[in-house]
Image (cartoon, rainbow, N blue to C red):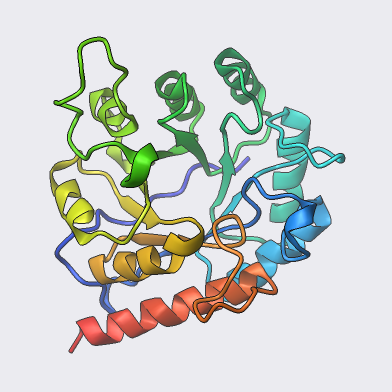
Length: 279
């Protein structure tokens, strides 16, 4: 059983990436996508293993996967998760492996806790969406098992809410995901990363993150926002994310044939930003 791996250092909203501090690129292999969304989406264990190996060879420093049952349904079952992690590690995927622990795999918060506590093979990290019910307890359970946590918080757009802890929200209204993360005591920053999903590449949102708890920062976007946000992450020196789970097209609009192709494009963007920042 592999233990958790250290996260990259805290990113600054003002510090550009440099050759001395390269931006980490994670790959989201499949996300919530299904077979109908194209052959680039790996779903079966052999497809996931092949895609992960190619993405790492292209420069991915971490791999995020949504494990699935043989019928294609997302699952947090210890049999499904354990078999997939063992297959990936056994095939030589040597970078940190992350599993999504969201409602797509188990809608019931108590059911998610039960699944996570029954895992026999542990990932290095797990993704916890703070917009979903039971996120705080789930994150605590993962940390107690030695699994590092990516706390996902959406910002911008209708789903993201405001940057501050919703001071303008009316009495009795539910706190937004960021407010929930801020209210959650971060006792072990070395094993927690704030993964901010941006609806657009808005530098003002990133600048406002400077006062958050001292945890590593990752920025990512979905679909049309994916590449602008990745460029922003590269300029800020934050961790970046790409992959079929987030976007199906390359920066020039062509359909991506694989996760490796997306990672190669991301590494090119990150490299260009590093070169510009070192001048």
